[in-house]
Image 1 (cartoon, rainbow, N blue to C red):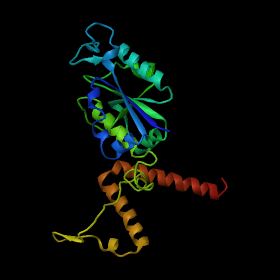
Image 2: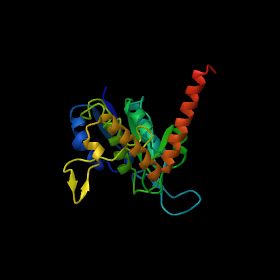
Image 3: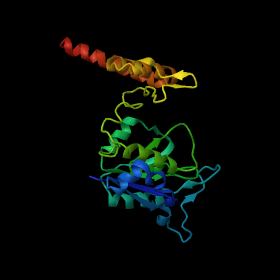
Image 4: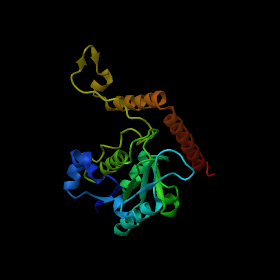
Length: 246
């Protein structure tokens, strides 16, 4: 099954961009995923191809029109009705690795890229559009965010990464940040690779890596650590109830 990506954008020339090289580029050439772009402006209803208008209630900037967006989405859905429609917006829910895995396991995705002040709010409910954010930042448009979303999905497709286990120990896969990595030379500018990593003792190495993941997550991302600890406590509680026959 080919993962089919459709991008709704005012700037189709921005694609494939980085997705045309490295792992994603090779995977596309091999037919593991496909990419189509749809020019939102093609669905404008006036001779000037207008896609935006002034915000209701006043204010700065312009807002993408709901009728134009709906026509573009309807067109994309007619070509691939089984895939979700995702709008890249800072008002959306934060994108997580778990959501990326769900998307990568499906048939594809339609990604709606905003510009100006954003979307007419009515589009989300009227067309069942999922709002997704890549972080607490504001970009000039949704296209860079769409590239990030697709890159995260594509690398998880079967056969894209060299080893099937390459992604299982990375940051966020187990609810923690990934442990630090080292390679040759063993000593550089007076800094040495931790002795345990040169010991050949795989059990000790695994324990060291687990501990480093926990330490780094606790220090750098206390929000992740809190969720991880909460999940671990809940899981342990569930296991106890099962053992006790409750």
